[in-house]
Length: 53
Image (cartoon, rainbow, N blue to C red; front, side, top):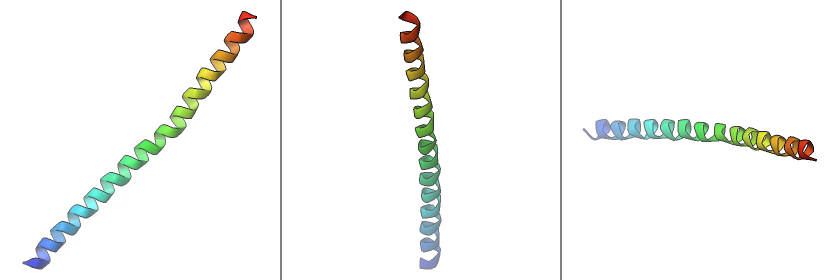
């Protein structure tokens, strides 16, 4: 009986680790997106300054 409960706990731990890994990968994908958005905003600001001169 103890083996089954320990296996059940281990299975739950695996699911939790997988979920954490999946969430971390999703959040890591936000970094390049944020950098790209920053680059676009900076480019727009630079072009706007050049046009308004």
